[in-house]
Image (cartoon, rainbow, N blue to C red):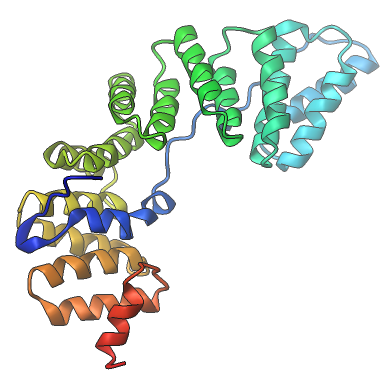
Length: 306
């Protein structure tokens, strides 16, 4: 965070990212990785016990039930298995059980199911990725990175494992490694806007504003109504002294009028540009919307004459 760069009129893009920017993730729908996919299992026709098993497996493979019921159905299917599931079938059921458990916040239980899945089917890349998600949820960062690495080794052409590992590395502050993995994900899935968006955020942390602007523009081209991308590009452009930053701030507010963070960010920009009245209006509205920047309450008190 050292070496803060300032854009036009002393505006500090770092301040926007540190305060208003914390809301980006809540507005941005990231690409779902392994733990959003359910695997189906085909069973040969058999007697009554097999019919019950088939029903349990079918229910375990669907999205109609709640995660709690899915987990129960999958575990019942594993208990009812008469041997016909085989290694691949049991691996798929364990995987689905792990997905349900992870969705319920039961990371340890999910890890156990994913462990069984990769033991039975070592080349199941989705299970390695989901295992990494479960490990990361427990704070076991090194183990999670290793699991993502296994997924990459199994399926090097897939973007998901690279994106998962990139997120982990970005959170850990390993920005160069994160950038390499985001780039690998983009090379494999050029239309995944999440990879561009998240790489742009890392580039912004490193004050590589022109590159960040390009990535935010790539997101806007794919999701023109994404307010977080417009705000990100506004920050990058402001840092480079590009007047079009104002339009981007305005677009972010227009697309998300109830997002206090965007109002606050534009207020900072306007204040730095000497547009005090417009900045004050944004600060007051951000406060009304419940934005919690550390200095906002003081600003509002000063504006109210308190």
